[in-house]
Image (tube, rainbow, N blue to C red):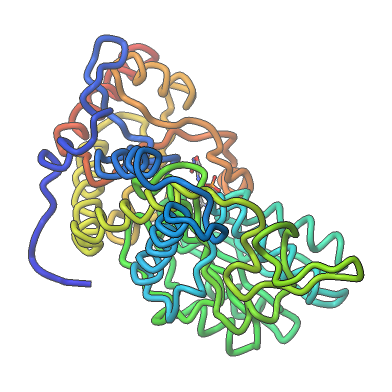
Length: 412
Ligand code: 7TS
């Protein structure tokens, strides 16, 4: 990763995103729902079109030219992703549908084979449902116990409690590198080291970290990392599970079918080598290749620059939102968080806030953001959430602040 003093030019970047030039309800679109999904640059859209127009065929099957060309592009995308997260080898990169599928793969393939009564799986109160529910299901099936690291009132993991919760019974610690609600950036490297010290494996939910921060799986030393293409300028329907090679080789398959086998006999089957053992059936070929284009796009911008741009926007948004009466931002101050701001207002319900903003062309999300336990922790049913990406500007933050003042006028 190059670390230059280059800063992002969001105005120029916006030219690459056709959808940002459309209007909504007769107003210019201000897209602040990037935590849910990001928009796509022309480079990624073109990659999808180009695959279907020029190199489309099924992969890993044909002797024919097109199948070989598609396979080369598909495996090329895997190499790009491996490099992007600094995996030791592309073999450690499995194409899945999204973060959710990546976590379920580990829960079912590793969890069902390794967890038994007396074992513990540790997660945190700030997890997205996709890093909660699979563990609830697998713990129920295996008799293992699910434990939770509490979140402090200001949105940090309670590291003192972690000390008590990580024991020799902990088989896996699964946590998010960055909260999709309070935006907290967790100290991944330290958490991994502490889990490894008691012999636990670590799964990092990278759904929010990988699109927004430089990520190095070797520096983190995590055992698994799951993330989604659609949150990092890539298409929907494609995501990644990274796993350390030895672990992946020891794990049984998740799904059975074509592609994941070496040999099938009526008496039984033998598995393909990793990563193919975990890629049953025809994969999302064009989407994987276009994810490679998204990785190229972000790499060209530089992930240090992406993170710096969002930090700047979040600081600015903090300032601008400060003087809106009755508005409370959830979570840590601007220095310890990514570009996501969840908030509540005394004057209006989050859904009403989102509706008023929508009428102004401003897209934010309202609800529990698939993090109900975290909202329960704060005694909330819902919050409103604005989240930023590479193409957002201070100008748009100004428009957000103005619209929130209007919410107070309407409901206040
Ligand atoms: N983990 C985190 C931290 C997330 O933010 C999300 C999606 C997921 C997992 C699941 O990702 P998926 O691609 O498998 O669906 N977060 C959100 C959100 O905050 N609003 O919509 C989706």
